[in-house]
Amino acid sequence: MAVYRFRKEELEAHLNRNALWGIVYGDMMSYLMILFLIMLSAALTKEVKKEERPMVEESLMQIQQIFGAKPDKAYEAKKSRDAEFIKTSKALQGMQSKDMNVIATEKFVQLQLGEGVLFDSGRAELKEGAEALFEPIAKEMLNPDNQIRVEGHTDNVPIRRGPFKSNWELSMARAYAVIRVLESLGVKPERLSGIGYGEYRPVAPNDSPENRAKNRRIEINLLRSE
Image 1 (cartoon, rainbow, N blue to C red):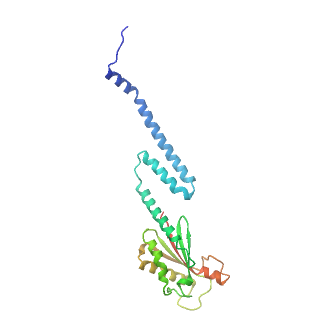
Image 2 (tube, one colour; image 1 turned 45 degrees about the horizontal axis):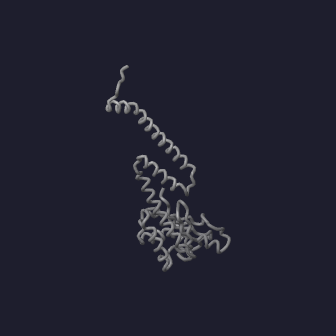
Image 3 (cartoon, rainbow, N blue to C red; image 1 turned 120 degrees about the vertical axis):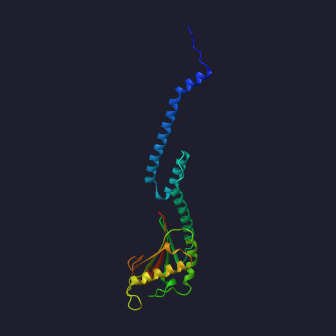
């Protein structure tokens, strides 16, 4: 009986031809893994808590890059903006004082300044020395490109004399006065906007002098970029 002997080159070629299925199988498993990771990322993004979402998104982005995905420039830009916002938020929270209340949320940082330290009753011109209160605020708000919304609020006591016909007009004029100061301190005007709510957004019932004083306020909101 004749025995066929493979030469070394023929044997290697024969084995390589039979191993092609392994390459195809390996590619198919890799694609399936990527598909399952994409499905997992979609599910996790929907179910994860809001405060944990940045951490999950970062982990998923790293997994995708391991499999050859190119860095997402939009994601990297958003990550940089978020980091700058968080840094500024912490700095502003450190300014909490008897004259300024600070409220920080996921979407904005709000600085509340009472009427007493900024304006005389019924007036929209800043008191002498009041502009100095805005210098550290403007300094911290210079770097991020986030929008800044200034809101004016009053109590519900009707205006009976003076240049303003209503609390609405007074609140808008006060918001504008603060905007002008922030702009003069270097904040870009395209980042600034203002609104006057008059007596219609109270933080306390207008049933006592103390509560009415709480409602007469300016709020400066640093908004988180979407």
